[in-house]
Image (tube, rainbow, N blue to C red):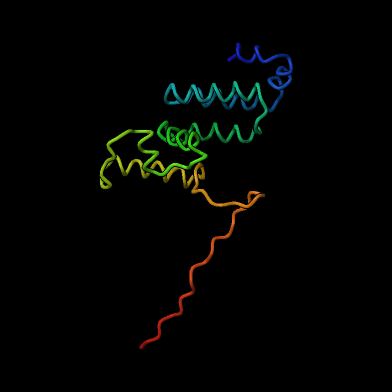
Length: 156
């Protein structure tokens, strides 16, 4: 990590010595220490290294990602990775399954299918992924047309 930051130049020195970055670094070290797997540790190292070298997003977003590393399993991140890689053509749940686990697809009443549904649900409820919706040129969601209005049935 230190070698990568040293190679980025002197303008990085101000960033890595700022209080905001140091607070982020302390949180990252705690997350790294508590990580269950080497994959999570690699994610934390990549995050903190890139955060020192670039300002692509705010430190609040970086803290949120550190929380995600703590809250989610590598299986969640595998699903996020597939969705991100295919973001121009959003994948279906079947496409995600095949990309992550390969064929054959399990029966709907299997334990594997239940686990997969739970992973997708966790990411949806946690607002990490969402169904694509049409937006206007300003990024606002377009209203969906309402279906025909039904009148209540009379007692005839």
